[in-house]
Image (tube, rainbow, N blue to C red; front, side, top):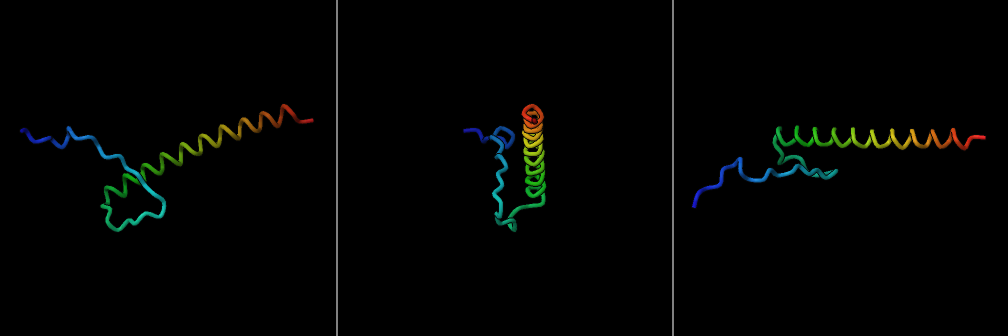
Length: 64
């Protein structure tokens, strides 16, 4: 039976839980989590901006 190459294995997805213990994580793992969280913040901010724009448009439409 042939050994499985590291490249053939599915990549483990970074998952971060707020308040999670960090002492066992490497610098690379911490960097990956920071990048993941920055992407999530950008996604949240974009969603919030869209909702604020919708609310402003509705407020303008229904303004007396």
